[in-house]
Image (tube, rainbow, N blue to C red):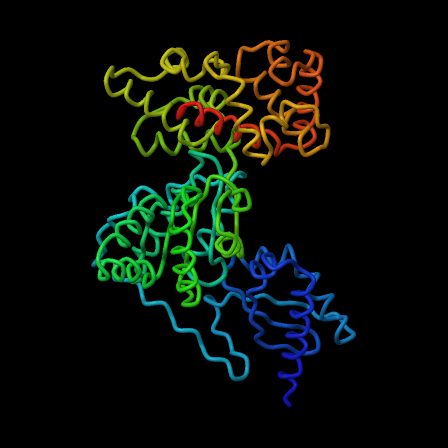
Length: 458
C-alpha cells in the first residue's frame, strides 16, 4: 500500500472520530472536506469555497490537527485549499465531479428571471454585523451550488432581507450559469399541489416534474406549511429527490425550524440538517449604510444628519427603513425641495411616534408569547413558578409595559390578579437580561413584530 494511502486511512479515521463527537448537523455543515495528499508534516484538504475555508480554519483547524496527532503521534499542519481555485490531485480511485456549465458570453445576456426581482442582487444587499454570516454563506452557494450548504435555511422576522438574500442567489445563478432556477412561495407551492391532485394524472405528473427536475429550488416562507400535512409530505419527497441529485435548495422561514408547529418531523429534520442562519435587525451603522445605498440608488441626496435621524428612530427592520426613505423621496419629487432634519421630522412624525399602542390588548400579547414558548395562556396567567413559565411571563409583562399604555396595576390584574410590584419586578428582570445578553434586544423586537402582525390580522 502506498504511503499516500496510509495517510488517507489516517484521515478517514480522524474524520470518523470527529463525526462521532459532533452532532449530525454540525458535522455535515462544516466537514465537507476532501483529502488531497499528505506527508509526515502536513495534510492537504480541499474545501468548496473561500468562506468555508475561513470558517473551518477558525472553528476546527486545531481540533483536526490534534485528532490526527492522537493517531500518528505527531501534530501535522492542516492546509486548506479551495477546490475551484486550484487544480488538485484526486484521492486514489476518486472520480472528478462534473463541472458546472459555463457562463454565457457577456454579449448575449439572459433575460431577467420571470420569478425573481432584478434589484434583489448581492450588489444591492448591504452587509452588516446582523447578516454577514448569512450573506457570506449565500455567496458561497452562488459560487458552488449543491455542495457545502445544501439545504440552506434563512430565518428571521419580517422585513429583514430573507427574500432579498435568497433571490440574490437565484439571480446570480440564472445570469452566470445554465442551471434551471425555480423560485416559489410556500403558499403558491401549496395551491399548485392542491390543483394537481384535483386534476387529471397528467397534472399530477407535470407538478412533480416541475419541482423534482430543477437544479435550484428557492422556497419562501415555509412556515406557511404548518398544518398542511399533504403539502408537507409532497415537499418531503421533492426534497429527497433534489438532495439525492445534489441540487441546491434554499428556504426562508420566520422562525427557527425547531419552532414550527404541526410540522412533519421527517421534513423538519431534512430542513435542519445542514446550514440554518438567522437574520437580526440591523444595528445603527448598518441602518445608516442601508439608507445611504438606497438613497444613492434612487438618485436622491439625503444629508447625513437626516440619515442619522432616521437611523436612530427606526430600528425595527429594513422594510421600515425603506418605507421612511420612500416618504422622503416622494416629498423631494413632488415638492422639489431638499430634505432637512426639520422636514424629515415633520414627514415621519407618525413613524417616529412612541411605540405605545392604546388599541393593543393584553390578551393578544399573552396569546403570542404563549404560542412562541409553547405554553398555555392559563399557565402564563397562573401560579406556576417553573422557569419555562416564569421567563415567558416576565417577557410578556415587560413587552406590555413597553408597547401599551396599561398601568402596572392593570397588567398585574390580567396575570392572575398579581400586585403591581410583581410587574415592576418582572420588568427589572428583563432589563437586567438585556444588559447581560445583547441578543435579548433582538429577541424582544422580534416578539413585538409578531404581536403587531397578529394584532393587524385580528
